[in-house]
Figure (cartoon, rainbow, N blue to C red):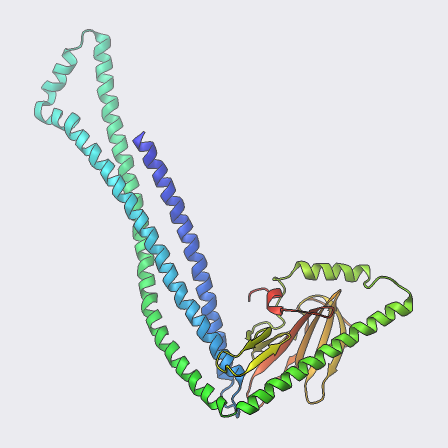
Amino acid sequence: MRFVLLICLFLGVITEHMAAQDNAKKIRENRDKALQEIEYANKLLIETQGKTKESLNEVNLINHKLNKRKEYLVGIEVEMSVLDKAIEENQFSINGIEKEIDKLNRLYATMIVNGYKNRSKQFVIMYFLASENLNQLYRRVRTVKLFNSYLKRKHLELTGLKMEYLERNDELKKLKNEKDVLAKKAKKETLIIQQEVNQKKTLVNQLKKRQKEIEEEIRNKEKTAKKLENELKRIIDEEKRKIKTSGSKERMTPAEKIISNDFEKNAGRLPWPTQKGVITGKYGEHQHPDYKSVTIRNDGIYIATSAGEYARSIFKGVVSRVFSIPGENYTVIIKHGQFYSLYHNLVNVNVKAGQNVDIKENIGKVFTNDKTRETVLYFQIWKETERRDPELWLAPL
């Protein structure tokens, strides 16, 4: 019975070990993803070298990178904690097996080893000669053999379990050593974080000297956003007038309804409007983390990407409008049934109004600012005239 319980304990620990490995794998994947985002943010910052003008976007990129570095370090610490727990549980199980083996060894010493060692053949002969008949003699011989065989088999099985545990423990220790190496790297990362914090402070102080200019830039962005909103509402009003003129009661065709439903079903899984990117301006109204007097209101998100990157449709649909605001670059609005996706700050647009577009189809090149050397796409999602937070609709990169 004790052996059955020990097997159950073993299976339980193996299950916990596998769960720990799965958890560690997920943590590693998240940590590696954070590292990739750090590297990409670094790439975007390197592209701004040679700029003639600092920008809030540069500060936002550094903030993004700092947040990802913190995620990276936390990932290392959590993974090491998971492995430490797994090693502790494994060692506990090994100790339990060793105790069982010790008990068997004592049993051997008492009932087998001492008997054979002290009285050897005479003890066995006397035990067998004391049999009352041949049948009892046969049973005694058979019992001794079976008992001896049982003890040896259980001893081997328990020894095998112990070796299995030791192998698993060695495996975990190796992983722990790898995490120790990462922990040393984490200390180096801490120094890098401090350097980046200092870099950001320098940039923030430089930008504070241009406080009024920055606030003016933010107001201009909000004015642009308002113009984009008005244009979108104008498109919807035109569609309503057309429907009213035609005498139709339906707002959408059967094909548009399917696209609209499919679009909504894919919330949180839609592809990004750029192949790669970093969100440097989040949706909604909020204070800038480094400029408390600066309030930012975004109807969409700002995505920093690499120079030469193209914007792409996040879903199949029809191009509703291609236009430019005086002093601004091009904007493309795509209709997906009830939904609209808006892509602003484009050049070399290669689609036109009324054109059907497929998912991930290139629609135009994202503009690169000569002064800041930044390439930023302004992106919105609307359900008719209701704004949506685009970040909640896009799949994780």
